[in-house]
Image (cartoon, rainbow, N blue to C red):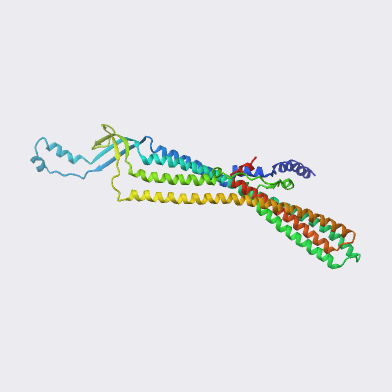
Length: 446
């Protein structure tokens, strides 16, 4: 009894905690979470940060550089054997020196110094700074494009999941209605009011709908897993969507925004790539210019026949160094031509992709208008199918319509509702495509 009481108390404490940990995600919640936590955004942010470090590295190449060095070497001297007869033949003032050579085992050299350099002029360096800063702008545009791509993918998958939930709701309602009808038919069959074939046909219809429901439920789970990957939600976390917004979806007549390519991340990315290609031409031409740098070397050295850290002598050097390109057998000129061709290729890509962006906008506008018209038609079709079903259902209840008639209108109503949901999904997706084509996807994040 005591153990049961403990388990009840634990359940009271644990249950509320689990309930609070579950979060129902709206589209806005998913978009914010994706922008902050998706793998693609993290990678794009790191690439942008890396590009800023590269810019600082390039700038640092033209700032003062200093390097210190410390060297020690021992050069062994082979043993020298001098006979007394040879010493006697040498002058008195030289004989002691030559005789001392026999006692020298090695020559010790120690040096320490600092080398300082400062770049004074380099056209390659100045162009390199421009390239590094332009590359930083390029990665910033890539970050913006990645963000819009994520918003596009999350929104598209979100609406697909919601529409499948709506279809699942319709299936469940139809299954419930048919189960009630099936129970009634079974009772009527037991009282010999209907045939066995009527009951069997309804049973087959019910089984088919339940199979379809199971397939739809599995599809929803797959889509939710994909959605969790895109948004960066941990796999162990439950993803619950706010399905109540389905009935509140706004599908009023669309308003078309003006096409301004300059606001599109894709356009900015193409523009930055073309500008970088142009700077590469400048970088290739910079190889024809001389470079000028100042340097200074401050060294202290010691030479002795024994190891000791003293008696250092200094030797300092300062100067200018100019590197002047003279002749390269046409190598530098060929590099300039290659860079020019690369730039021309980028211009072709830029012009082609700009046309694709314009075409994408026109296609998005046409698709939105077409989806809107089809949605209105499916709305009327769904309402009409509902009216027909209600009439036939009333006639069936009064014994004036057959089971076949009821099943046919039931199937027509289900198809009409599903077609409306599919068209609503197409309309919402067309809205997303138009927002992308006009650079306004971020407006989905409140």
